[in-house]
Image (cartoon, rainbow, N blue to C red; front, side, top):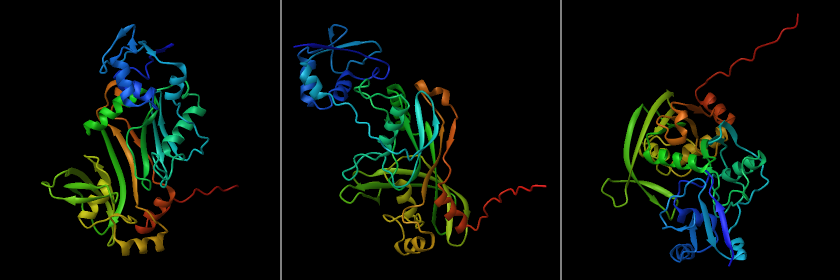
Length: 336
């Protein structure tokens, strides 16, 4: 049996060794990984370690595994030759912030396994020479949150393991990254602070409003700012305090101000009118802005930094039509 040596770099440090091995040997059963740890088939710097050992930069991991088995259990991330449909809003050595178009999944599902935002980002980083799946076994740059397929706007990606860990921790703490959405809803919706409870119905991929005492109920906290209104519609800025599935869509629907175009939680008759009049067949919901309120770890330099993603042209056009806004006049050029 040949010993496989792997030197841990900064993209693989600061994580438990069992989690690292699960990502490295992604085709191996979990039982095999824990068996290797118990039987001293895994050593770090020549010493047997427990499954909760935290890997450090430049640690040497030794795996006692046949080469053919190592090749069988490791599967480099596939890089697809995909058209880049997202807009780069901000990028540095740690993070990539992109604008996702409506209609594009963040992660693969049973119907789409290739053309996703996550895979497009890997294609983008690979083409730039910043990500090589062969050299990065056990680590893949990825998003730290998601948007529904038909919601456009900002998605944050971690480009390094440390950045991903810090971003995930910031997302868990809720108040570290402030997220603001733009939406148009039915009727006059005043500025308000909404608190309620929801429960996801996994069978129908829907969520519903429930009472606080319902088993499995999750709290929702949403802050709504009325930007402008007319007799039929309101343009809102919405900030999420919690981050539940379909939270904005459910919360606005529950107070009788559903988002226009929303086929799951919206007004069916209104949606028919919206589709006919404005050619919109999905919800008018856009992840408009993020602000790093309390960044941590390697991302502290982003303190108070704001990133904005303008409305897509089709939504901007609908907004201007609904609220009778004028397009800015183009400057005329006169030749004398």
